[in-house]
Image (tube, rainbow, N blue to C red):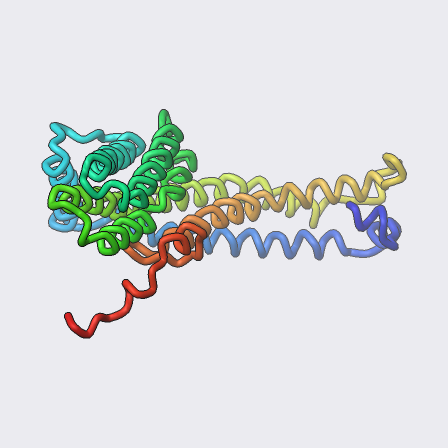
Length: 307
């Protein structure tokens, strides 16, 4: 529309040529192709969900064992079943153990030399509280559940905790060393939990992509077919603000036929962004951050020949 108003254009070309038929004929091919592509992607999701009894039992056993391991480690009776509450529980476990570490370090004899650890604990507690608040009442299937989890940089927290523990190993008491170990263990639980819910979220979104594209494909195909076979732009007269009504109508119908692509692009962009931000699991940090530079200690990462 902007190019029609600003650039050199003529409505006569729209009326005198078969450009409308060519345009919407291409849209029919594109819509059918996109539906085929989406159905192919959906088959991969279905293939993951359809399996023999032994495979389904193994999946359930893995999830149950993971929950029971966390419940036993954190001394919790029954862990929450809702994804948002389960992730909040993991964050709260890490927050509790970080608070214990801070108390042990602050009350120890070398507290002045360990202020760096106390600052790390304070930052972890503040960030944990922020993420936990954002997860309140978040329902699975919406991006509200996954977005706060993506911001919980557990990999950096594990790296920072291990770095500080090694850096101050000579000044740490046995109790502080155990508190560090408990904190690192709690943070490491968050990784596989996030990956599991991320996988479920991606599958959920791919199903939504399929449904959205299929719902939009039939009406848009009907519109495109009508524009190819029946529409006569010469019968649309008049203009609005100097813009031909024929061009406005053709432009509006063309936008409507783009609905399946808009749905596909919107969901895929979000899914691909999530996948990119969570490529690495565990101690590896792919994106450069200011926090990483703040705790970097090149000497600690070198191989020590005497060991």
